[in-house]
Image 1 (spheres, rainbow, N blue to C red):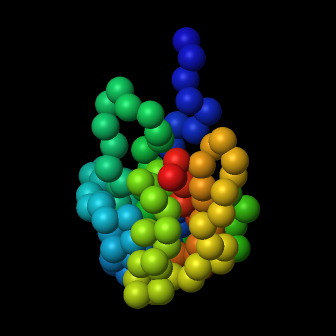
Image 2 (tube, one colour):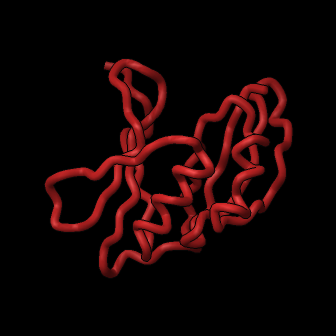
Length: 123
């Protein structure tokens, strides 16, 4: 059975409310509480049968945020739009929108917790 290589991602944060506000503002989405674990988790929107990987923000003791070596890319219609929201949401633009040839465009950023992430669009 063929599956996507990434099945889930977790972004570790120190202040889950601040991180929630950051991602909701930049990506124009709503995060939802994930029931079950004894640690605060907020899930990114996920839909069955569509391309992409679900994931969450996690505030867990002993799991540091920032300085990680995993880069998660979020899909956008035009990554320059989301990049323009970074500073107001408490983040930082690391690399402006740039072409990656036939694969579209990317921008690199840091979130409110110091985590590096990418924005990807076809236009």
